[in-house]
Length: 135
Image (cartoon, rainbow, N blue to C red; front, top):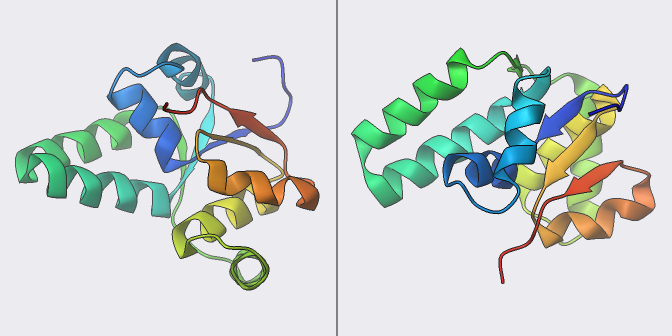
């Protein structure tokens, strides 16, 4: 936690925390020491939970995330939009992940994830913390 850059949490990092998977303790420390969460992460958490566990669970998780001491990025500035388009056009990456990576780039943040899709962006100079991948 001694990094001076902010930490930006991908959906996979939040799910690690919510599902108490390996790496959850590290995510919890990040959450309570000033993390950044883009709206895309909230959207993905909501619809994944809605699909897998139903509306009450999705609403509960959304409310929980909104109460955390994090900064939620809810607007898409033009540089983020353009960088997300660049990532999407150059790499095999989902639209959501390209936006999350672009927010990390714009915030000069460390991207916290456990998604191998992001590995191809290491050549772009993004700082990352890789949580344990699922086997």
